[in-house]
Image 1: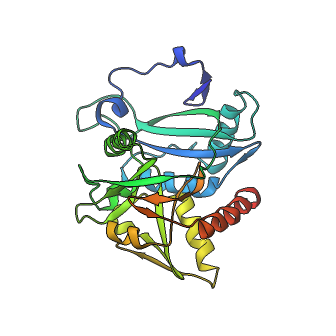
Image 2: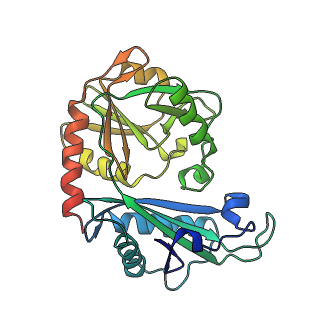
Length: 277
């Protein structure tokens, strides 16, 4: 069942027209959320990012869009699925039908879809760099809009070149993120991740990992500019997102990496997922 504006419907009963603005213009944002039985993981973080994104995109936030209301809608949507240890939920928010580039209204519709989560981190995980097109730096790139063409093309490139994922670059040829998450590199006692000014998504797990690093006196964190060449010199590299948590990378081009720090961070994150409010 899919939750469309608070009503649980089968897929064939969803009424989305050719005037849908998410379809026509990518005029939509989304959150991909991990849900454990009776618990939406890091829900407050997802909620406040969603609200900030809607404000930035001039979407009118419904009065009903409270933290508690949307959380309950997510749990009701998950309850229609077969029993599982975890679920993946996508929450979509898009402006109502009408208009060309200029919308007729800034009011919104929303939908939620859920599925049992079967993802597991891989022991062997390879990266390459995608250079055909760039992810332009700037605030708009930090929002999870439905315009994911770059990620789609990079994912096709990864499959064609038999690697698991690709690094996306900005117009300055600096590292932005991976196709499906934020990226961190470890060199000695320093852990680096691209700054938000590089154009990376304001990742929920990115922020959690930054908090873990800052509370650990063993490492120094740098949110900065990173070149693809630096990645080759790293001791470790790992990718973060709300679904996988932390995926250590084992190879990039001809370089192989350790996974000690990434696995340690993953263990700390797992505790947070269970204990967070």
